[in-house]
Image 1 (tube, one colour):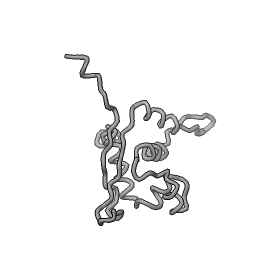
Image 2 (cartoon, helix red, strand yellow):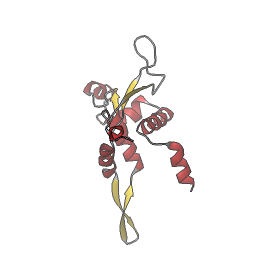
Image 3 (cartoon, one colour):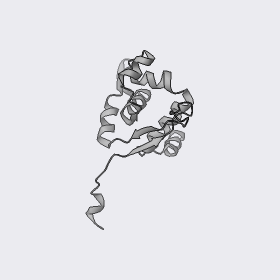
Image 4 (spheres, one colour):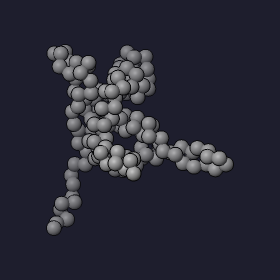
Length: 135
């Protein structure tokens, strides 16, 4: 045993992913996207943005907005293409980066596959989540 095992240098990593075979580079090859992982601290900050107050009867309770969380996670993890690029946003006449992604770049299946990849890259096991949902 050694404490050095816990002294990690690079917490974030960047992976390439083909999100759509429809989006091709100038040579006709599928364009590779760059997906960056986030730290647990960054993830906590995203999660905190996703709680909303909802009324249940006469009481208020906090509810987690999973869709908003996944959108914020995608926005944080996608390095390339730069969804905040003004030229890209102007081309689609859409200033919201998530709408550029969901409305213009990817179809629903591609978006779901991308989200699965992003979650997996960040250490989430989707099989565990499915098993947990069943119980």
